[in-house]
Amino acid sequence: MKYLLLSVLWITWCFLHSFFTATKTAAWFRFRLEKRFIYYRICYNLFSLFTVIPLLYWQGNIPGPVIIPLSPLLRAVKFVTIISAIIIMSGSFFSFDAGEFLGIKQLTDKKEAKGIVISRHGFYSIVRHPMYLAGVIFFLALMTDAVLAQFIGYFILAFYMIIGTIHEDRRLADELGDAYKEYQKEVPMLLPRF
Image 1 (tube, helix red, strand yellow):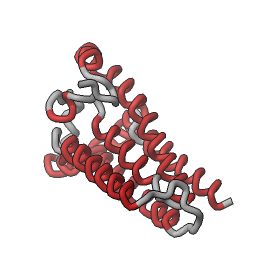
Image 2: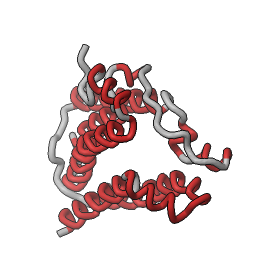
Image 3: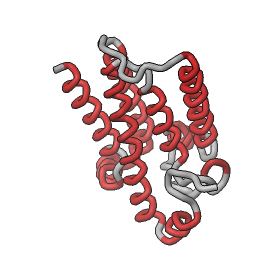
């Protein structure tokens, strides 16, 4: 029962995370909040953070069997994989305006975000969604040597990253039109080609 509840809570968290980033949801809040919409992004980020922490804590405290046990050598590979994912995520994060992404710039400038800009440098020249790619790699690596509750949570998050990539790619194509469609032709969505 606890695994089912954990799964439902993770799926609910993923749904809410996507729901509040949806174009229609943001437009509804923009209409309702008017000038106070500058707080939307930071509130969304804080909501995501403060709802994910209890889930991670709870899943980390549910005892259970290890699903994919690793040898010491494979643990080293896991460690390198996790570090690589963090490097990709960090490098991708700083390829655009981090203050705007976090919702801080909107508060200091007292204006709404400039909007989406297509980035074609760094990891964004290799794949269109390097942060999602890093997230998938990160959670797949965490699934190894994890107890059942952690395995379930990380699996759901890795799967969500893939679904989120597809959703984000469609949203960006709708919002940015031909410029993004050209970018889609030039750079792969998630798996790099060299």
